[in-house]
Every structure is written in structure tokens, then in C-alpha cells.
Image (cartoon, rainbow, N blue to C red; front, top):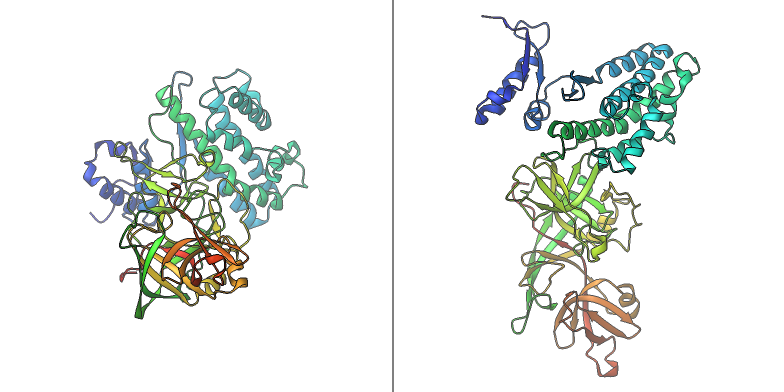
Amino acid sequence: MGFNPLPLVVLDDPQGTFDPRNKRKWAQELVRSANMPTAGLLSSQLIVATHERNFYQMMMDHEKFSAQQGLIGGVNKVSGVATIANGGELQRLYDEAKKNNDDAKAREFIRKVRIYCEDLIKFMLRSVSNQIPDMTLNKLKEELKKLCKDHVAPFDRKAFDGLISALNESQKAIQYINEPHHKDDESFGVAEADTVKEYWDKTLLDKIHAAFVVFDNFELYMGEPRTFSWAKNIIEFPDGYRSKVKEAEMQQTGIAAAAKTGGRAGDGILTVNEWDAGEKITLPNHDVFQLAAGTLDPVANVGDIIIVSNYATINPRNLVVAAWGSMLLARRLNKPDNHSEIAVLTGQAVDPYALPQPVIVQPDTNFRKIVGTIFTSHLLPVPPIDPEREFVAVPDPNILDKTLKGARLFKVEGRSAEPIALEGQFLITRNKPVKPDAMAALDGRLVVGIDEDGARYFKRLRCHQKIVVLESLNPDGQTAAQVLSLDGSHSLPKIMEALEVIGVLFELPSAKS
């Protein structure tokens, strides 16, 4: 026809009538037409209402639908009308204020942010009291706090905790929003609007929408939501110093195998076969982050560096990092057989009281596979404690050159290196001179110690002047420590060589990287 005879398309839950196999193609076709320039003959304006998160994500995240997004509070026993909350007007007001440096428009923007928040919260609290319509934002926050404290569902959910915290008047932006004089006080202008806009984009918008989704699901089912809640991603991975990682070179020079006789899981006894010539190993498409929470015990401790692959295939039970909602998580990935629509991120801890709560996320969450660790907790400053940041950017990227320069890789065969290194993984090692000061510096570090009889042990070194104790890494208590000496005194075997284990590489980079 040469033109689109349907310039306005309104669809209500269209995915309900689509063939499931073709749902993605329908989303692609709808977005293709809607994203055309408005002046084009084939373009159309598209309005879609949907309750299905997957279809929404297909349109917004995968097909990049260029559109305003709103939230709908459905019709129920309390309210006979649907409420639509759309933040597009706020963006237009702010853009106009910035473009014209218009303080009056800036004050209007701040006022509209307050009204937007008040309207959504009033909608959620409309059945609580007939006083709700007359309450200000601050009073609404106090009402939410009271309901949360009294464990009134759904206001006792974590999403409402986050919203209450976001509305705290210790925040400068909230002070501006609640200030009654900004309606006509000319001391408020574009600068204050900038503060409000930054807080709105980074914190408040996400918190109020998350609470609204929890509330609406609860109302929809008149009780506990039957679907798992989901969080909009508002955080990016920190800088992983990819180019710096690429410069690091290691040499794969041998095999560390379990003892041929009497070896058992975690006994720490190795047979090291060193090759005459080694293979150079680099990490071409990898990032590094510093672990900031004890969620990967005993593989890595707080302050250690985790090596992350940007391309490796992720399988169930792998260690991963994830950006989810406003959180950066370092966990083990699990995929329940009875709930294929979710993934569960579990943490590990030696102390059962420190075991982190599992986190339920979507299977299409932004995961990256952890493929190694570098033990740097004794070299780098301890990262600040933040419940939402389980890993952070490495504070000093030069640590990579200092630790990995001259490093040698030994492939682990057998189970003698458990639980730190599994079969098929690689110990990252460096030679250390067997001298009192060097051994004292290794106190508490993981080493491969070699005695005068040629026995090799992968254990934790403790130095007591001229006595060296190699402690077992096996937590079952069945493996004895090895006691050696620096000079052969006390009739003890002499330690002849020490390889400091500076990390573990779980897998080598693939040819496709």
C-alpha cells in the first residue's frame, strides 16, 4: 500500500493470543513499526498494556522499544478505576527548565515530583484511612513506616523498607521536595532541580516503582504474590581494568597431582611434574573486581581479587557476578528444576551465622562467570561494608603486575588441593626464597612447600622463627599438619623450596575469546 493504514495501534495484553514460539517475532515487528520516524508513511503510534514481564522485556530490553513507560494500578474491590502513573511529564518539565534556564519551570518540576510520589503512595494506601487523600508526602511516609512496623502486608516487604529510606529527610533532594515554599519562593531554581533530578533518577524512582509493583501484585492476588518479584536494573558493573588484565602474562609449566599412594581428598599432598618448556597464558577478555563480602568462602575472602570472564559460558553451580536491581552480587548460580523461570544466587560462608540470604533473580540477569581468584586481601585496603555491593572496583590496578609478573601455573590433577582448588583448575604460583624473612612474610599464606625428602604439600604456612608449620586446608580435621624447619634443627625435615600460591585459575581462556 505504501503507507500504514493503522497510524494508532492500541493493544491490551496482545501476547495472550500469540503463538508462544512467535511471541518474540511479534514483539520485533510491533517495535519495528513503532520506532520508525513519526513523519514516515509506515510509522505508527503504539500503546501496549501488558501484565507479562517477559513480553515487556522483549519489547523494551531486547527490541529497544523507544517509548515512555508507565505503571498501572488495576481495578479492584477498593477502587473502581485504573490508575496510570507515567513519569514522562517530569522529564519534559526538567528538560524545558534546563534548556531555558527557567527557575519557574524548575520549581514546577520539583512540585510535580512531589505530586507524582504522593499520588502513587495515596493509591497504595487508599484503603487504610479516609485521611489519606489529605496527607502530605512526609505524613504518607510516616504512615508507611507505621504499617511496616506493624507487619501489615504488603507494606512489611523489603521494597517498602527501601522506599521509606529513600524518603528520609536527611537527603537534600527530599528536603527540597517537601519544602512548602518552593511553590512560589524564587530562591528555588534550576540548581535545586538538578539535585532533585539526580536523586530521582538514581534512587527515588526505582524505589517507589519497586514498591508499587509489590503492592499491585499483592492486590491482584488478594494475598501473597504468586509470581516472583523482579527489579529493574539501575546499576552497571564497575571498571574491570580489562586492558590491564590483558597485559598480565603467566606461564603454564607443569602439573600438581594427588599423591600416587594414600592420597585422599583435601590431604594437601602433591606430586609436582614441571615441564622443560611452558606455554604463555594471557587473559584477553577478562575483568577483575575486589570481593567486598564473604559470599565465596572458602574460595575467596574479603579483599581478594576475582577474575571474571566476559564471554565464558555460564552453567548451573558456577560462581558468578551479577548486576541486579541496585545490587552487585558475587554468588553461586543455581537453577531450580521446579522453577525454570527463575535463578537463585546463593552465598557461601564458613560461619553459619554469616550465611547470606539467597537472592531470586531472572534467568536473563546480567551474569558474568568468575574464572579465578588472586589472593590480595593482605595487599589491598579492605573495601567498605555495603550490603548492596558484594564486589567493587580494584583500588589499585597495578597490583596485577606486582602479583602476576613471573607467575607459573600448575594444573591440579586429583582432589588433594580441595576445597581451595578443584581437579582441572590451576594453581597460580611464584617462587619464594627459603630465608627467615621471606618465610615470615608468608605467614598465613597458601604455599606449596617442598621438604628435603621431596614431599610436596599444598597447605597454609605458619612461621615460628626457625619452625615452619604447614596447616591443612581440609576442614574435616582428618589431615595432620606438617612440621618442618628452616635449618634442619629439632630433628625436623628441612624445607627446601616454597612456591607461594597467589591465586587459582579455574579455567584457561578459550580460543574463541
